[in-house]
Length: 182
Image 1 (cartoon, rainbow, N blue to C red):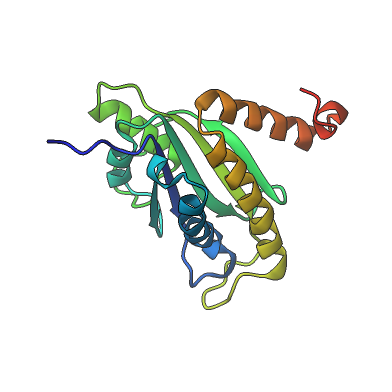
Image 2 (image 1 turned 30 degrees about the vertical axis):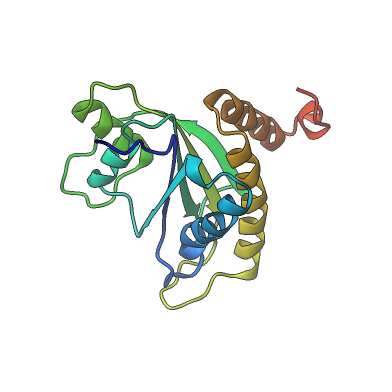
């Protein structure tokens, strides 16, 4: 008998020993502690790793939603939330894959449709080995965690797309989005 999978999978990557690269794993730990207290633990499976690898495509199978969390040096502050779709498949030989590549791998190995997928990229600035996350990066992670709580409470593809659209309008400076007008 097969155990049903949680409908939402959250995959975070980053190296806790490389400064702001620790933001992904730190957010995943906080989410792990928060989800049960919010009554949402059974809907989410959390997976952390140093980088996304081809094997993580299997973690996407049979899901409704997938969220990829990572720190990014070129990410606008405090974070970016956007949808992602299958892209060009990077040939095996690279150990690190993008979310787009993982979705492409899933499309090759499964006849099931892929989950609706989104990326939460948190602004990082210093990725030096042996450093702790910086204060600005931690402030960005704090904003991202508040947003993560909203995401987990609104776990449907349509709701996540609305949040992504609103976040895009906020980045573009849309006064209606800032005021909360849809």
